Each structure stands twice: as structure tokens, then as C-alpha cells.
Image (spheres, rainbow, N blue to C red):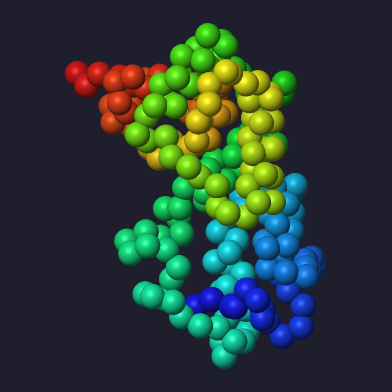
Length: 203
């Protein structure tokens, strides 16, 4: 079930993010952005904000909501958790979690390694677009992701997201395997194309 984005709920758009804090906004997109910013600033995983807003209002005012095909707004067989934008958001949120970030930031690979990886990613079939369509949300994720890589960059375009690892390629290419949590025996490495910077050959 979904709450209509234009007409919205009775009264103002709002959402309780804790027992003592309720965020308010003029539009659905503004509320979604407020929730995202609050959770990131409080070292929480953003989660599937859009679905949570729908669930919150449709439970309180079911008559205001409507069902879409298969009671969802994602392609058949694809859940909210499968959306690339959500996977990247969760990855970035985990990488900026102050409880996990080492003092001084995540260890970085050499620029030579980063550029080599980036060239492989740019031409990889698993390199797919991830922006959600919410301009403010996407920019917040990009800004947070830039912090993960200490704002480094390589002269390679078309770095999107990895559909296998679920990370933002623009930042991942700069990080060491240890920072990424990728071990030598990680089974996903065998599923990567041969030109991938994380590829290993099956024994």
C-alpha cells in the first residue's frame, strides 16, 4: 500500500524517528530527506525510508492509501531490498558509521591500483546506475561516499555501483580489500569478470 505523494496524509507530513523525536516536512520528498539526514547523523542505517513512510501512514489512515500491481511499486520479483539505490545507501551508511571508521579514516589503496580498478569497473557489465531519483537523497549519499574515500578521485568516468558487491564503485576502487571487508577466499570474487580488480580464478 502507498500513501499518495501529492495529497498526502491528513495534516502535515511527519514521521517519528525515535520515542521523543518526530520530523515534519511540507512534502513527501522533503520528509524522506529529513529522515535520511537524521539517521545518518545519528549513526543509524537509513533503511528503506520510502516503504517505512508508506507503512506508517497506511496503518494510521488505510483509507487514504492505494495498492499498486502486486501491492508494490517495484518490478515483479524485485523487492525494495534489491534496489541498487538502497544497497548503495546501506553500504555508504555502514562505511561512515563512526563506530566502524578507523581513526584517521579507512586505509586507501594506491592511486595506481585505484585507477586500474576504476578502468575495469567502468567497462564492467556489473557496473550499473544506482541513483534513486530523489535528488537531495542521492546527493547526500554521494557526499557521504566521498568522505569514505577521503575525497580522492581518479580520471575515469562512468563509475556507478557494483551489482555484485553492492558498493559505490567511485569510492570502492580507492579502498583496500581490508577496508572493504573482502577476503582472499570471498566467493563473490570468483563471480567477477576477469578484468575486475577483485577477480580471482577458481581453483
